[in-house]
Length: 193
Image 1 (cartoon, helix red, strand yellow):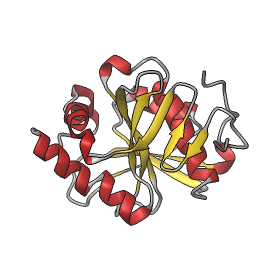
Image 2 (cartoon, one colour):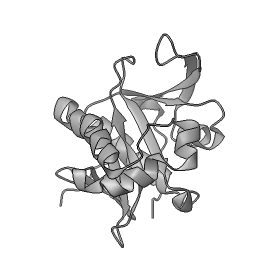
Image 3 (tube, rainbow, N blue to C red):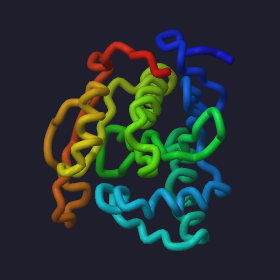
């Protein structure tokens, strides 16, 4: 398995990335039950928004129109994050290309029982490295609700800096914070074990 030259803890194999504790892979339709749980997590609804996913059929449609369509259109998207040791799905992390943003957007979300263990940082670092070394991106943005202090702290730890407040759509009254990461700002890698 080829290892990343910059980070020996990240190994890439096809459509998956492995870190010391995690496997990050493309979602499939078979992940609908997990998606149903993830997008209905109270923190997802509070900070990301209610996607109206209430059934397995809704989750399959969400996957088809979201991550799966992004993989086909862009070659990347929002991915499933699972524990390497057990294969249990714990969250999602990946790159999203939104029409209203000129740059790709790093997104992440984890079920509440898996927050506070460093999994989001580990997955996000691996995605940033992949975005830089494999996909060739030098600039990545992240959008976050101003009240989501945990995600903001993580973005800053990863080397993102606040750029501005924006509206994702012209008719959206809610302002969100836009953070930017640039290749030169990636902090030295830390032990991800």
